[in-house]
Image 1: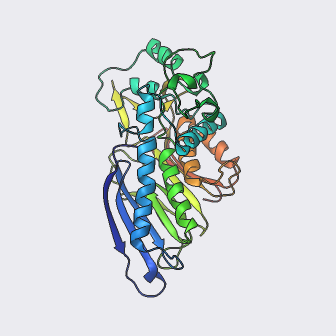
Image 2 (image 1 turned 180 degrees about the vertical axis):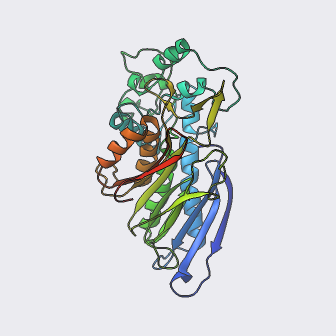
Image 3 (image 1 turned 180 degrees about the horizontal axis):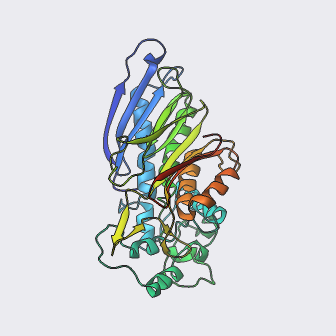
Length: 355
């Protein structure tokens, strides 16, 4: 979540002949950027205005619950050390984060924010943190210090204090700080898509920084999404494409994570913005970007394919090219395109068989 939701939403009717005449597009501002939802209203009883209102309501709930940039959100208040009454979304998000922490063996750690902070990836710091500071910070944060679930910890009045989340044997009494950037945007897509499906929408593309799609586009063709070429200076999405991904017509989450737009240069050396939460240092890898597609067949994906794609793309950026290939090939219902640099700086693309 990058900044507050802005409540300016644009509803566009896509007027075209034939099959696409029932498609609409809804655009607005959420999570620090522009979101876009394209959908087929055929067979849907709600009006376009009612659909727009419900999408905004879902995104508002996410913002007031999970945004680290909305100072009044449940997450921001919790991170300030306040006792809160967590709603279902807050508790479900913690459970999702814990599951990915365990699946990735610590490569995805939504409680390791303080380690990321000391690296100062606002790209304004003139020095890098010492090994001693990294070690000290690692000991004071991370999922390893925290209880596996929130619900058993709630008080009689439904409240949760940050200290309640600490394990008795925690390595530090520092209060937990949570950051769900690794999965929250993907989950936002899934929640909007799930609601659309519940009211009868069969053809949709939900783009909230990450993507969920199902069915076909207004032309009756499979949805297609461009993959940006991960080169220095390519800061405009869609300006320089490495290729185009095409859906198979079924539900799918699609997420790209990359290092090439967020690098810190110190004494001639490039440091990735991807921190390995297991070591506390930037991941040293030739992997430039990972585009991951997750289908419902993914055994551990549950009903949240975009959240799973979000987490898997982050996981790949932490572990690097070779281990990412092994990971993707080991998972049913998951496909990926990995773009890395070779010894002479040339780009090398690897695609799993079904991508």
